[in-house]
Amino acid sequence: MGNLLSVTRRGMKIGEAKVWGHTVRYADYGPEDADDVVLMFNGIGANIESAESFITSFTKVRAITFDAPGVGGTATPLLPYRLSHVSGIASKLLEELGVSSVHVFGVSWGGAAAQQFANDYRGKTRSLTLAATSAGWMSLPGSLSALSKMLTPKRHSDPKFMQVNAEALYGGTIALNEELLREFSEALDHGSMRGYLYQLSAISGWTSWLYLPRLKMPALVLMGADDRIVPTGNGRILASRMPNAKLEIIDCGHLFIVTKPKQIAERVERFIQEIGDA
Image 1 (cartoon, rainbow, N blue to C red):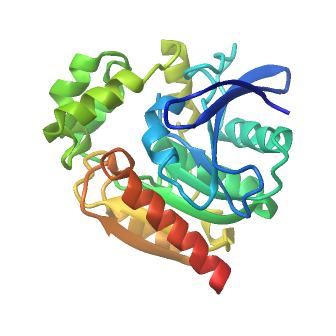
Image 2: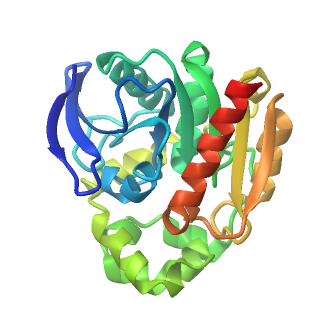
């Protein structure tokens, strides 16, 4: 079982678990005996704390997330890795926590990891929610301005860079809410630059295009109407390739789990409830 290290002011429990001999830092929120568990895969360079407002907005389910290799409190591996490695870590972490099946949620880079997990561990995946993400190289590119800024680790390691470039990067209203943007920037603790580059290499050449039709679990695709990094057309591609998927457009940019955490958590919980009622 994982070891509890601390509890945040919002009640999110942070612990560490051994996976393949390495320490993985994870967060756990909600009752351990909940009927439904959400497993969240976070965005590139984003640690547990950056998702705290979203995770703690759930009211009916247990939510689990973790720092990817080289991010936050999870050590950077010696060698680059692929998304299959991330999905394997998630599976082993769930075993350590005594969780047999989950509703998978992935945002941005984490949306790719979530698709990989759903394919690798279909027996553990009860549903799949993909937010602001794509099918990898078979996708529609974002704006050149946003993509050029996304490729630099400074967007996570330098709060000033984030504040100056937030609108061009993410779209939506994040740049207009200075307090929220500052809180999000200060929450980030990204580990090493090598870890960030390893996350980029993990999705280099990756695509879910070929196996998406095999993901037959209920799926919800959420896209931001003003997303500069992952245009909404990518959501249409994902939804059209999965047999039981539906697409919804959120009136926001790329960071809608940050600007609308309660609304998105409520939508995910409603989706889970709809599955249970079907």
